[in-house]
Length: 216
Ligand code: PRP
Image (cartoon, rainbow, N blue to C red; front, side, top):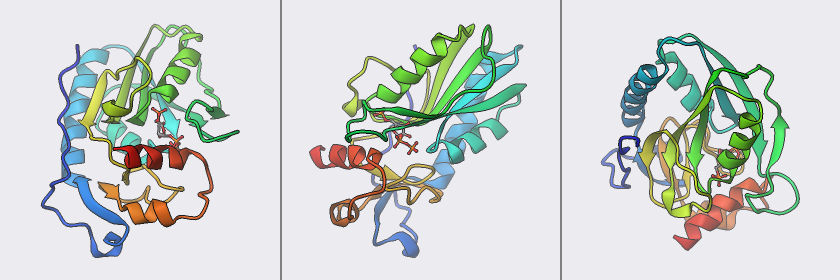
């Protein structure tokens, strides 16, 4: 069983930078907290993967910042590839997942570390795990920055978790709303006005998390 991950509470004393204050209500996880946690997670991954070259498989697009920081902290031989998966398609259900980029590296017999930014309903990881398992890797371990357990509908947990978070609509550090805010260096709580007033966002993945927040 994995060690419990720290829980993020939205009471950070760090103020949202002025530029983002209208859109981001508050900071949930600061840049420093993220950096510190990733260093710790990396040590755990190194202990588990010692001795063999691993294949890191990262899910597009939300993992960009997390992945970059994670792998530069890993002192291990690794190869890197991506799978594109998104909730495009007919309807807004997160079950309607579309693969936008296929894996190119051969993972047969390899140790795989599957990286995602957030584990929410679990539908994405379950779908991708199914695809990967069919390629017969030696083993697959999963690593997510954020775990929103309250939203889970699939029976899946990640092996490495950065932070447990409540059911807030979070953006930043790779996570988006309508493809925006991925560049924020922290994880923040999106102001409800942003997603309530937003015209039809360009992709249906976003209302999925907006809906989650409204329920919470
Ligand atoms: C988001 C996120 C995860 C997934 C988690 O992806 O990046 O991959 O949802 O949700 P789930 O556990 O309910 O399946 P999204 O489709 O929004 O694409 P993105 O990574 O490009 O933001």
